[in-house]
Length: 149
Image (cartoon, rainbow, N blue to C red; front, side, top):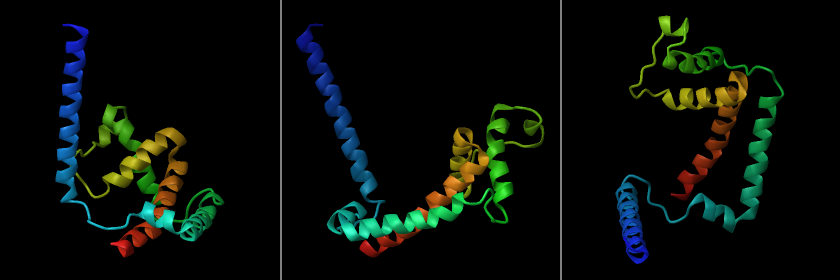
């Protein structure tokens, strides 16, 4: 194959990929909310809103990192279960003897999955704090998103 033919083949592959991505975006657009204003546009249009939101989110995060263990009643068992996912998935004893990973979709998979991955990177207690911080930031952002819809 000549260099010109190779360039044409790569161009055709890129065009096919772009059209597949465009078709997937159109298909997903039916599932996603239709709004005129995104959060990014709202923050660009109103810098005071951006800085006030950032300041309040940081203020909500400060207490998370001033205590060694967060005072949530079920945090210990949920963090331990998220930390056990890795040992159970690879069959490491003794966890694999008593537990198994349920790979089917469950409501808690988002938090357990995030906490499990963050736990591998930072340790289980810091992972619980980071997950709580993420959720605390999402609450006002999701409310703003709903109000913009």
